[in-house]
Amino acid sequence: MVKLMNPMNRIRDHFEECISMQHDFTEGNVLKKMLFFSVPIFGTLFLQALYGTIDLLIVGMYSDAAAVSAVSTGSMTIQTVTSIISFK
Figure (tube, helix red, strand yellow):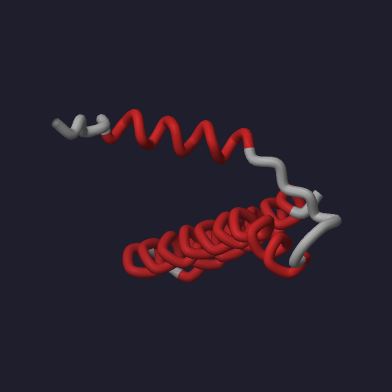
């Protein structure tokens, strides 16, 4: 009889395996490892830009030009801060 594994146990095992992985950037294909390393950073920057764009579209539908300008300036400021923090 085949025993099925609980999906949550599989997810937990995979997570623990990923946490325990050691990535040595001095050996092997450096480009592949650098891309793997940079995916979360680019994902964060993309989501932040998407959030600012959607926020700007919604404010633009219901407010005046001053509000759109304020949201645009705020989004760009937050994008810059996020970029600086991500690459430190």
